[in-house]
Amino acid sequence: MSESLLATLRPARARLDLDRLAANYLAVAAAAGRPVMPVVKADAYGHGAARVSRHLVALGAPMLGVAFAEEGVVLRAAGIRAPIVVLAGFTPGQVRSLVQHELTPVVSTPSMLESARQAGREGSKRFAVHLKVDTGMTRLGFTPSAAGEAAARLVESGRVVVEGLMTHLACADEDAEATRRQLDLFDEAADDLARRGIRPRWLHAANSAGLAYLRPTHTLVRPGLILYGVPPRPLAPAVRVQPVMSVSADIGLVKEVAVGTPVSYGGRWVAPRRSRIATIPFGYADGVPRTDGMRDRGELLVKGRRVPVAGTVCMDLTMVDLTDHPDAGEGDEAVLFGDDPPAWEVADRAGTNAWEVLTSVGPRVPRVYVEGGRIVGVESRFTPRAGDRTR
Image (cartoon, rainbow, N blue to C red):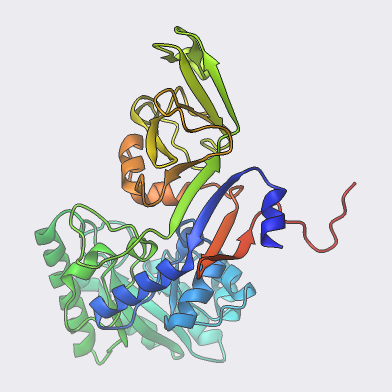
């Protein structure tokens, strides 16, 4: 069924290696030495949140992290029963959904605090929350000096349980000293809660880069990028991982062009000699960056060799120069990123980071899941649904 579905789609795909995902998770868990909450927001960084979540929960992940309530609702609809923490907050209109779907929100603003207190007063069962402390990200969260009072107001409402205390590290991948200062502030906030008799089960600060700064009192880590096999940089924790995702498409056409022939929009790339130009059926709507860096210095991997991008990346198509690779031709696979080139290299060409490269792989690119060397699933937005009819 999977292979037959792929045959009906254009020859482009994002391959997801579930064996690598499992190995990465187990490596992170071993290095952390405490429970791991995988972050599966943004469709698991483009890897497919439902499939990834089921796989990680089966491996023993005790809970999952998403950004928004609607992401948690989708996981519940997919049959995920593990606790789900909503990291980026919620609106008053989402409280009913949080309760109905048993999602655990992070309280990070005064308005969220009041909404949580009301849910505790009006509800018939406990309402678990995590409280966020702003230690230097200057985004969401209560100041360290205000966190204790916020926690006290939550618990006095009756059924609200402060299950977790968290902060977010602003530059754990860049500045070790600034990260330690943030952790000191976080620990001071945790001590203030303890003096008030509030001792959350989960104390967590470590994202992927933060694994290098674990403190004994912290009881949970919440890695994202590194689980998908892409270490943060330049300061990366000492955990060996491999990329889970590889994005590629098959060459659709190769044509020979004369010296001086312009290629793609704007004619900004001009053949310096008689050239072999290949057209590949993926573009910036699929995650290929449309930047000057990609046009001028970008490379794809074709039959084990790097070949340069030729011309501006289009929405649906990308051209490469095969002149120095005479063995490559139509039907050969061109890899955007994976083991080679790595996601960070594509990010450098685009002037961005690896997080954006992964999450930019568009939804029309089918996700092909591989385990034990064979395809175990294909997910595509173009898969016919029950009740669909061909006209």
